Image 1: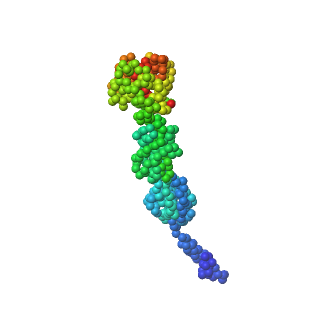
Image 2: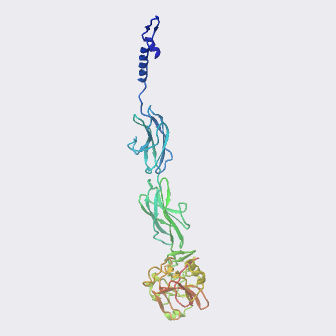
Image 3: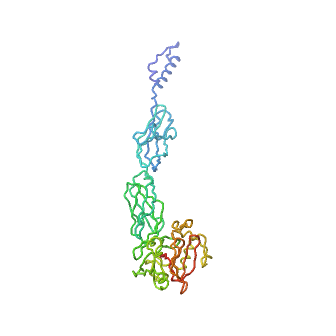
Length: 442
């Protein structure tokens, strides 16, 4: 530049005859050169930057980085990531800032919708304007669905029905829903299960190939593309059938499985008929199997079951196969599982325990103010009894008795519940008496 200037600057001859450049002129030209140089400096532009692929994608979060490689000749005062569900997002959409200046930066973004396609770009701003990096795409993950387990219904000896309700699909389509069940807690899809048609929030399934008189655990389940979840666990007991096909509800109490209804069969489990003996005199003189209905009215069959003498209970063939008439000791196991203390168990001809009788009594069906809590599920009703000395029917609507094991040659153990008592009465009575039977699973 200076050479160019020197090439055309005028020369001035001094008094000695030598030529040179006037200091004033030189200053003027040097200043002009500086101005000219400054006039050649380029104007600033918007920054140059890129957008990196999305990482750590979840149901509602993502991490995206950017890199400002050129500030455009002016300081970068803002930078970050902007995103949206439409292509070419700008700062008019959602955005998150991440520092200033050149270089790499990272934004951790949250609050996204599940299973949604998003577009994102890095941005950088200087005094000239806002620039955007290349556009990337990502899809958020599918959330966990939510399902609740319904109540079990339609319970039979080998089948039952249960279902559930899809509370949330987690942002993705439900691909499978149904119930799973097992004799062990917390059943899952590795256990027995049945699927229901998808597309409906409420669903039900049939559970088949169940074992009679057995406690089962059930949970509803739901699947989407990312998750398999289970509803809360419910339990139920399958019913058991006698030789005549009568079905009985069952209940697990402690370690035992009991019928939740009195036996009502008129045949032994080898299909032998049990004689129906309505006559009082004949009843008390019979030392072989006999049964009757309360007050000799069959209408009581479905309510209270059948009344048997002890000779029938002692055949070993009265209950369905795999079940038996409980012994005195097995009744004690029941009572102790309900909280009766050990020093009360062997008392006889006395009301024992505290509230064990109330736990065994049905919550309905007794006289006003005499219902139990039925917290055990035993569901005892006041079917009365048949007196062994006269054959008379007594106590219907007030109390009930159940046969147990032999006491001696004339007497057998029983258990008694009264509407006015909360305990359990234990004693022995004449084998000719008429009482009910609750079968216990072997």
